[in-house]
Image 1 (cartoon, helix red, strand yellow):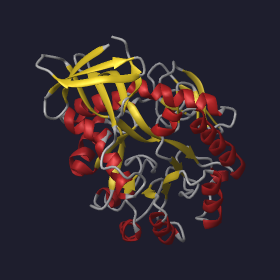
Image 2 (cartoon, helix red, strand yellow):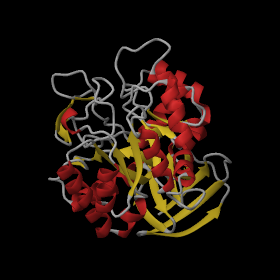
Image 3 (spheres, helix red, strand yellow):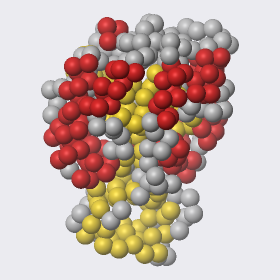
Length: 376
């Protein structure tokens, strides 16, 4: 199989020769093409995919590995499987199944720089807590952190917490010292609390504009407190639902190069409408592809894929494809590098995609390995 594509920024045209599961060669050519290539996508927040829930102990390590392989078809070469607020026992079982997934397939292991722990150290308040189960929300606990990180074998590399919690600043400093990326989210923090968290080493806001009440003070609110903090990058869910188009445009314009894309995908992503789960929550996905708790307007993750997120970001914000691509690849990777989660300055992966009708992934490569090739 040969694929010809232009570099997403420079426009230089290359031919990729793929032989089975290996890249047989790459060379510059002169050709016209509607395909582009660039660094592999990096999803810092993915709760599940293709019917598989990373947050439910009934899903084995093998099916978790299958879900990560399926992500390659959407250009996600690197993912942080995300574990939301749960009981100690569920955390243990879910972490162990992810550990098993990585042990089964070297390419799966290479695709996972670490795990994302979203909770339980978040605000218990309605709205800020989102769909996280109240019974399992917990105060900051170094003891619990050590226990979970021990079970994970040190693989938890991103933690989302609310900075207003008692002991949060000291915990953030501990995370940075342990080469873990601290992120703020599911919070009612004030500007002063956000600033104190950044002084301690916070680096990112998780899904800015979500994980907060529907009604807040027009000026003094956690969205502006985080948006206005230049030390924070911010992840955005570009599905047109979590953030209405005009809000996405406004946040993207204000953030500039601090904006990164995540999917916040759950098990319904890549799967048909129906009933699914995210942890202990029953989730319903309708024909509109919106993920909701049954009988409630609350959103609970998304059915978004990263290739669609990139295409949506360009369409809804007016950003160039190159900038949208960076928001899904180099920018999240640079956060991991700054937190010393990874050592290389950019991912060793490549995504080739056709742009004639949106964005369709043709191949996902990792070094000389072919993770996915469409065969077309």
